[in-house]
View 1 (cartoon, rainbow, N blue to C red):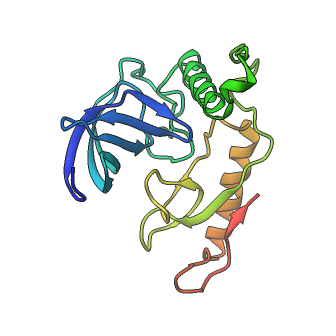
View 2 (view 1 turned 30 degrees about the vertical axis):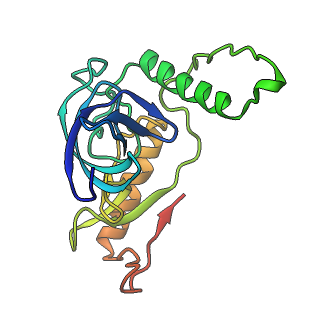
Length: 204
């Protein structure tokens, strides 16, 4: 496997933090972020060394059998804030539990003896559970209208308006919408990191 090569594979597992892993046809181990077990993906290799490769996700060729047709959030797929919105809560819990178990197994030494892994507890509150969020100001696309929300998936600059974000209570959406309208009406710009111009950065 060489840098720049495009390959395909089915994600076998996802390690923390969101690192999908599959085995390429030549036996190389390929790591690609923001994927779900069972997805068939197309990946461009960014780094390759001794059979271990890191790649950039180009396209999801086939969804995972675990994925639902209707994601849990209207912003899913565009917003980079949540990755597992197409999975049921139960599948999300299993995925995270496996990740935690592998992390523990990676640091617990055999000479310390066996340990009991008791799994994960289900949360009684599955939406609107966050009481603190940091939203970013930016533009929806290059030189586009002012936006306030989360970074677009795969983009360091573009911002997605997320008035219906399910991580927080609906009141947060109201605050986002009103704040965005206020600064749009007054023509206040976000801070351009490259140009060092503008004013607005974050809403905490």
